[in-house]
Image 1 (cartoon, one colour):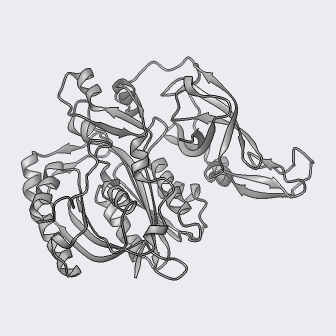
Image 2 (tube, rainbow, N blue to C red):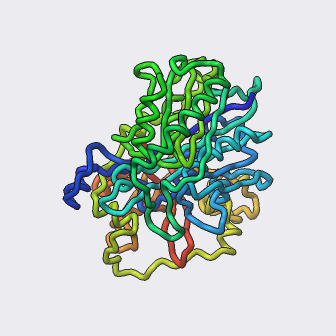
Image 3 (cartoon, one colour):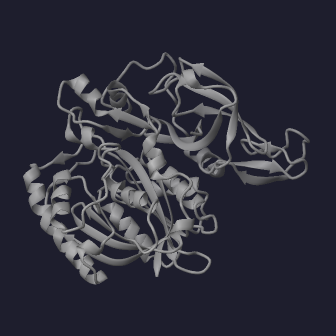
Length: 468
């Protein structure tokens, strides 16, 4: 039996209070907050962070195929999964594929990972943005999740195994977005409720029959989908036991689209007990249902950072800043030259450094170098270097400066010199920080970000963020 051997979730640091929308636009906005990807994040970088967490949770397993799902790909006509592949430093023989363009692609990516005949990584992420004052701006959210799937063996125990599936598909126009449009369109809500609920009931009935259980026998129900009314209506019709419907986290992070069903599953697995039955229902252009059974291995394999821990964090972002990050508010840029787009040939030659953050260590004296070098700066040995990946090595701020003139969608830029544990000094940008709160000696970790976009080219690299 194949199943989930490890998983990781990533919720961005920033939160937008819905009351800030009401204050700015004078329109009803509800209560609570939504998660917001920073100006230097996109669905690819969100996917990298979730995938890193999943891979760290199973260091003995290396993914041999990667599937990336998102409804908001950073590139069209180019595979986005290859950047995640490079950031994880996976073997060149391990293929990476996009399953992009629709929320339902998340269920497809996880299904493909379960069907693969080798260790497979399904990465799901989304950035949900609507026009200012619209429901998607208010109710959406940003986040990512990743699942590493393999066969259950003595050396690779799975945490959860699928015991039943159910699916229902129909062609209908309920939510859509043409290429190049900044926000989705949605049909009248009653129509979505009318088409989704029967499809959901059909898929749930099929899955429960296959599993040989009834709705009250399911320990926890995860019901997710961009159409909130349909999800609530389906939840009420299941006949599930009181308290078994999992909180959809709408008041904390909003609906994260392609990633949401998986993110809620990760949240449940964080506290699940052995033999718990977890039904995941995803309503998106139809319905996909998977019934999972937690195994005895789950208690000893909790991730280092749970979803609940990430929900408790978060810095506040203003509505004007949010609109700027999303491209709806164009503000005066700093009086500096615009950034130059990265060149493809040198980026390809430096893939190990640029994407995997791989430095080098001198085999003669042990000095560590970032970026990697051929000649040791300490003992001057030539071509005595061994590659060393530093993406997961913590560091300490040695010194920093706040630059209020550098080009950025979120000025000022905080540049820091950091010292890595075990040696190695590097200058980089800090992100997810309050410039007034940065101190020498603060502990930081590396995070994969999009530095900027210029000439229609995304420049991905690594920044440092505080360890919280």
